[in-house]
Image 1 (spheres, rainbow over the protein chains, first blue to last red):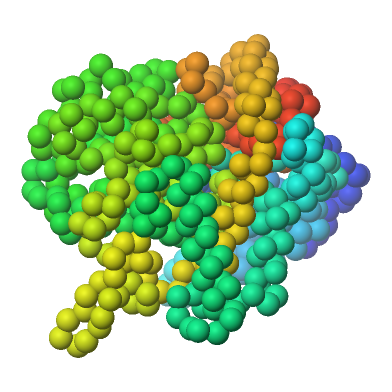
Image 2 (cartoon, rainbow over the protein chains, first blue to last red):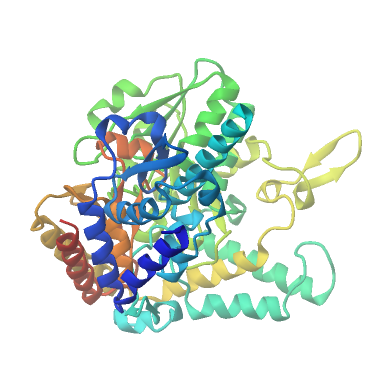
Length: 143
Length: 405
């Protein structure tokens, strides 16, 4: 499945919710149920500090693909993280760099990515893209 | 104006829906909504009564100057200052405190001197003094808080000595909502000839301030928390102090005469009002004070007491909820955490239910550290909040906690 297709899946998942509270209830469930990071990766160096909540992001490279795991101390943030992981993890750097995040707007959660929220999510996305750039650069130089 | 519902009618911003729900605005300690009279004056001035103050002979300038200067009289009356020249208009409480801290760094503070603050301060009453200390070699000393969030007055004697050159403390903490015993600290400091600055950002909203009775040397507050436009503020300073302290910024109206060899400064308060001030905002601050003066304060006080009583009772019945700031001198401002639930999650869900709260560190990291938490959730009430809204707040909070646990 392409990133676009996974994004469409997420959009479809959210289409059934007409009420804000249902949508957030679902995010909370996602946040509660997905064990997104191991404690040993919950390092200070993986910490993205927001004013409101903290986000940890770890990346691993296998067979030319980047696998992300992440966590947050806030459960709704964690729910959104699980969506981002679902979309970005296990992708090549090129795929990651080409992906836009329209699906977040589509499901009505764009406000959570606003810089004023300071919940660490925006920085997390930047960091995901930064990993992809760094990996790509490393690949290029070893050619 | 008698009932709270009557007061509400003057605030158009309160009558709106957020996320499909009726707005319950409980972030008043951050900023307040504005009454119609304030909105109208700003509009009227921008629409026609607009000319730079203190400068020209034309009619518009004369009108705006009169409005600006009459706001000074209104502030003087509102806080009972002995002279109108003791009222300096600033951009807000932060600017007011910075002005004094800068002046003290220039004129007063020397290596080895001490600035005394409390452990419950907003960053705006910490950082300006740290900057002043850095420049002068003075050090910051902190009057600690007890577990209830009250000042450790038993330690005051040991912290005040002849090296202390100023005490700068909050009238009411923006996190703990406790009315601090400023009278006592002023009396004690004055007995040792130490001046006192009161950060009145929250104090001006929830108590009747009489600077002569308090005898504080400085009182700083913002306009936007007392129903005036943003970008307005006041520094009250005893005239002798304002004369003694150097200006913070140069240019505009703050001069007596300028030549390339030497500039002499205007007398206070203009000495501290460099550049074109926010004269429309300040004029509207005057109108905001008129509004407050017209409100039935007995009614407001009764309503606040009822809200405090109700909220304290309800919060104490919620499992795992920790309230920060416990005192009988509490304003309707409640900061808390709920065990196992992140404040941001609660704030987000409650926003979806129409309830506007503050979450995070509230510009008071040292207070967070004192109570061993990363962040808190805060509900802060104003004159227009009703007991029914307090009820909605409690119901939404309970619902959000259930969803998250």
